[in-house]
Amino acid sequence: MPAYVDRSLGDGVFYAPGDYIGFWPRIVILLVDGLALTIGLIMVGMVSQLIFPPLYSLLAIVFIWVFEVPLKRSRFRTPGYWLMGCKIVNLRGERPSLFLLTMRAIMPFYISWDLVWSGIDEDRQSLRDRYSKTCLVRVKAEPIGSGPVQFSRYFAGGLALFYPYVVRPSRNCCGISAGQLSI
Image (cartoon, rainbow, N blue to C red; front, side):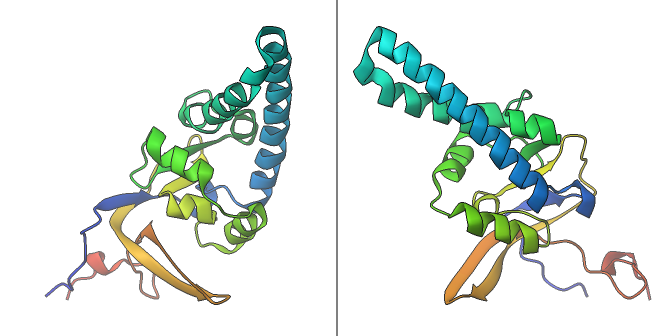
């Protein structure tokens, strides 16, 4: 009799380990997109000075949101995503919603924690990605399997962390998944 598998959070997909974007590509993305944002904000500042200077704050917020949310999920992607050949997807392998990406953009994680976590995470995802149910993968990446979405639990540095992730099928010593075994 098969063991009970909790599917209350639905199913998701997973990718080959080499398809996830890890620590060093994220550094490049951070630098390139940071430079692009800086140049864009300077241009927004120059335009707002010509039109109406007090408008700068509102225009800057709109510019940052458009850069961090709709552009990241579009087929054009940000300059950093384009340069590193990656895209952002949700746990089902689809484009994430504007709401999820907005929440991802405003999550209060330190960049250093995010980068360190992406270096030690099994799927090389940052805390921001984990909590917003997104993955950064290569543009040509195709899911290699699916599984139930469940919560992980970590206890580190006095913190109790939990977030949803896609459970991969377990494998025995010979690389055969439990579903392939027959008696």
